[in-house]
Amino acid sequence: MGFAFGPVNGRTAVSSFIVLPSSLDRGARGKRATRQTAAPTRRKKTAQGKEISGRPQGHALGHESQNKSSPEGAKDADALPKGWRRVAVKDMADSIQYGHTASAIERKGGPRFLRITDIQDGRFDWSAVPSCEIPKEDIPKYRLSSGDLVFARTGATTGKSFLIGDCPEAVFASYLIRVRVSAHVESRYLAAFFQSPDYWRQIEGGKRSIGQPNVNGKVLGEVQFPIAPLPEQRRIVAEIEKQFTRLEAGVAALRRVQANLKRYRASGLKAACEGKLVPTEAELTAKNAKSAKTKPDSLPASSAFSAVKNPTYETGAALLVRILTERRKHWERSAGSGVPAYKGKLVESVGRVPSRGVRGRGKYKEPAIPDTANLPPLPEGWTWARLEQLGLTFGGLTKNPKRAKLPKQLPYLRVVNVYANELRLEEIEHIGVDDSELEKLLLRTGDLLIVEGNGSKGQIGRLAIWDGSIDPCVHQNHIIKVRPVEALVSKWILHWLQSPNGRHFVELVASSTSGLYTLSVNKVGALPIALPSLAEQRRIVAEVERRLSVLEELEAVVSADLQRASRLRRSILQKAFTGKLVDEEPAKKN
Image (cartoon, rainbow, N blue to C red):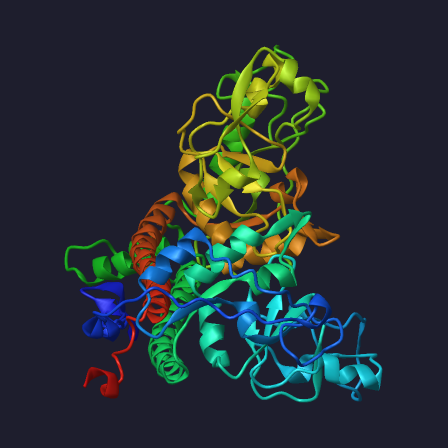
């Protein structure tokens, strides 16, 4: 696995060399020719209907086997290798036990208290597992030992299992179920089956959902699995572990590539927003002036010096003056109408557009200038602006029952439709809109759409540019719309607000109420934007988009390889539990 960035033919390239195991099915070479119908399973009597074996464990959950296989299980049984049979978990378990009911406490003494929440991504840290109050006489009943299997029986992780290895003195919580297998089953073999598609089909079919999905001990005990002779179980486990080790190494490499691509994306945007990605207009002007000075027929040195001190290009400051002038002209064109206008169309106000409606024409108010005291220095030719100086900011409509009765029903965008530089328009809803709201709510190509609130700090303020895919279309109040006066500035603002530089300001102003980070029209309008010249913006945006297109192609490759790895994992388990992963034992071959 390799990953590199570097210049190629004057441009930055990203290379990824990803190798996943290509021959993870060695068992296919040793496909068995002999098959037989699975032998019937032997029932076990249980003590008071609570135990699966003769080893009592208090309120252990075990149930007498009815020896019923699902139709799928019966079909699979016909194809099982010789010596295999399909059995229920309860028939191969010494006990199936619910955990201890108690509250976790932080203390050094007493046994560790393993809970669902302690198991993250199939692993946990015993040093971080809390303790609990438990009578000494109950500890043996709930004690965890190496080889035990624990299952989440409720919540989002219902059905997930974990194999206990070496552990300190520990008990398990009541939202977990412990399975302690008999001597006829290798615990790692059963643990592997509990990751297989066959297992999950059965668990999904047995889930009960009243509020939260859950699986009880009876459902778990009825799960059917193919059992091989014990020596073969151990060989299958060894092969699974070998192939999973290789596969997981490939997946880890892919995850590193994903992280590197994310870092590269952020560093590219940061460089772009600091004038380091392409030569600035000031640098190009100075270079041209220097070149002109060295030519015999060039202008006098004083003229070249003047060109540097008094740039011939439109600086960011000059661009801002032009935008503000144009902004005011739009307002003034509506003279006599009583309502400000934007490009000849009536709106509620120029600048920030309050949702409370028109309050009269009034006097034009210049938008506030940014306070640069705590802002970082900018490259020569750039200037700071507030977002409200560059365009109009609009709130959206609020959904309410009255809108269902309005005759005009239009498509409208919700938060689920707007992602980072991406519109997801597969699911579009309609909403009632009054004609008086249209000028404020209708979307136009080039509008910036900014998500107002999100539970995740990293997702607050995510934004995309409206591409006019749906016309007409409006937006809800949780999406703030920004319409730049100069349409060509839209892409620059998009990349600025997605860069680490812009994200810093977004997260700085986002307030948190009960874990929800929120923006407002006022806060969005006050966001500081670094503004280079329009010509420089075009060159920066072109280079950013070129690099992002390379990254997106690589991200698609990585995503496809991760999906392939997931399929390979399922394939390995499928082969393992149909007798196709390992060859027959030498003694059987002969």
